[in-house]
Length: 244
Image (cartoon, rainbow, N blue to C red):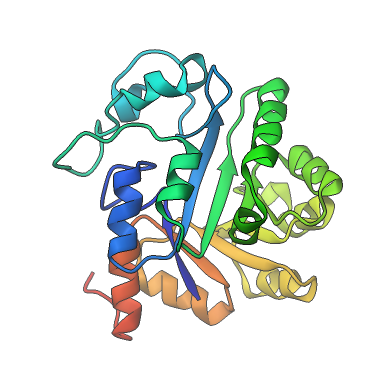
């Protein structure tokens, strides 16, 4: 089972920052998940929330600022202590800084159809053949993922499912996504088996308990997204759960 760093290493370093991704990479993590939005000047930027208050203690919405403005902010607010400023990065800067990382789940965030379309167009420009080999575009916007896959069948996609009423396997079938990115509380052997019979992967989020991670591995989950990737990887390497 692959260990994926959630927003870089959200529990170990400021989330969705270059410094956080480099911290995880330097400690052996090669697979990552991050959040993608679009700036006011059309750059793909890496940030989770629609507003800037929680991470950067700034006013306004992410899409209301240029990439340069976001790059001058410090995203250390409400994060693990960190010794230096951590700007909000562009997606391009993350991919370029980690050429040897093996995979990225790019979770697309959007608050309007126009912005989702702009993100799609920008992704198609950014994702070179090399990047398409290691990047999967994911989202909880089911119709958008379905349209994306229909328009570009060769692009690896993932459908993010949080609630049982959203019918995870039906959403996987409807969107034709390659990965079921599933809230780990919804993960069952039956759902894993159904996805695998369809030839799809199952990636679960967000798992920070080693005992739960081992149970999910026993279900046959393909990858696990965690806030503490370096700690989780060490625990699995030792074949022993960390103390509770």
